[in-house]
Image 1 (cartoon, rainbow, N blue to C red):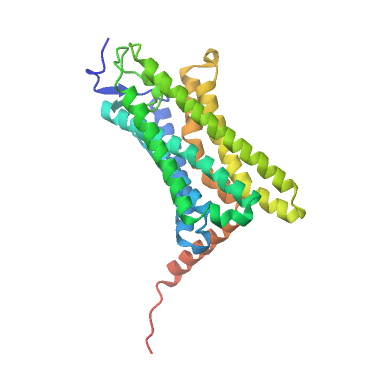
Image 2 (image 1 turned 30 degrees about the horizontal axis):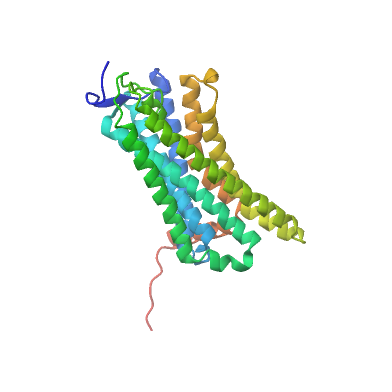
Length: 320
């Protein structure tokens, strides 16, 4: 028995106890992490460097890539380090920081995906008002609101979770610090405060989800009224990447937190947590680039320019 004042570190759940499999886990996570860094980094660089992509849709995509980079960087490197050095420990402060940053990025990403559905709705259903409803100032305010909402959500949950007395040990059945796992260590009825916050969070998420669904119902109705097949195809191409990202984000998250307790086990929880915390940040850039011809064209142009400079070297200046 211990209490929160005496806990200096938590013990994370290892993927395996075999040294060879620990190293395999390290290399697998390293490959996924590098793929996420490369994919999101290319999206960020492409959008930042090309003036033609300085539009609301790509501005929100830029923010999404930053959030994906942040969320995967919070959990994966620590898990890789633990496997490499054959340890399970994470400090109390490090655990609190991991909870805060992870909740911040996950919450902000969902709010941003909600904003992006509004962007697609205005672009297809109200194209004549697009410039008015989604001017540069409005876009900055909406993105800032998503980040600020994520920050507030993370602050409330982290402060409340780590104010609870913990007396059921310090072992977490997860490969990173997660609020439900920490709540299981609480021996006080005050965990009901956090349960109340979680209920509020679920209602907020449900409200955002309903907004996304209603937006896409209106979008699909508008697309069906487009007379030309080419116009319908272009409209669908604009929406499908966002719809795929939302589906991946929501389905993995719902399965992780709403699956029946009868099918729950540490090994299954571990696999599911990887699906919702590691896979989406690595796959999102691929989803957007595969269906976005404009993004692919600009990326090819940038890579061709870099390749040409690498071969020919910097061009010298000739003064008359």
